[in-house]
Length: 437
Image (cartoon, rainbow, N blue to C red; front, side, top):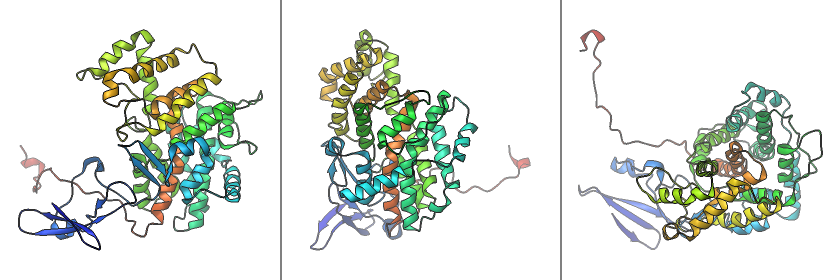
């Protein structure tokens, strides 16, 4: 493969050894690596590319999120994630992801009002929950209820109508806290708490989660702020597995509620959205502070299947910029709740300290990631581990919707249709069963 640059464009030349060469254009991005445009490769050469997991393939053009894993950079529409987490709100960040710009004061008020007025769900959805077993996992409930929304909101399922796409987007962002909180309430046998229009997005969610009709509930500003940061940090993360799932589902023309339900189902996988839940499971397995050295030793042993969950990241090779924000937030939450003798949390703090000082982890840049700290925070706030991935889905909904909306407006949109390297049997003729050995 050779590469050349002209005054107008850069190309890459491929040769298969037969003397035939193919020139493929190179498309530059605003930041990050350029891409080789292989759309005409099969037609001109008869070859497909082979890329399991699509880890070297750009599936789309996007203006929403940028990640530089080597430098530990995460940008939403060009804005650094730490600035948004410290200065913005989840709804303002949602506006940014959806529309590409930070809102004016008037735009923000109109957007907040629109979301607030859509937090109620159709009352018939109340009965939908009763079709699930009491011990159903909240993610199973979430997949079912979000998918069922297309049966209740027919006036926002026409994907070719920009207004209906916007209405569906607002509805999903607004109703996800209600649907999520009700999934929890159903699992513990408590009555559903309806949304309150006098509360902010995160305060309202905490109220629906933890309030009961018999007494007054006031969300701590520190806890609401911590949840706000967690939601902002999880709002989008480029073309990950669940986002790609939403885009592929949307490429077929499926309605937005079905697409988001597909994304939720993908996020449910332990290799994706279940990582912070896995952190708590690991801490429970370790059990006590005095057993940490034993598990540190096991983590260093390549022949031992045990791995420290919540350390290192597939994308971030230096540090996870989201973890930097949540590390300070975790300490604020623990101080606010005056938690000093919670065994699991004591264990997490001690494990973090040892891992940050141990040469083995430092040299390999296995720093605590966003899942490690978010797990600690959510546990301290009283969320059961079964709700961790559900909260991830709540936050990521805005990113999915932004990515879906961008795809719907892309004039080059095509239905997702990956190819394959076939290694099965060649042509075989059918043999009647009586003639088979």
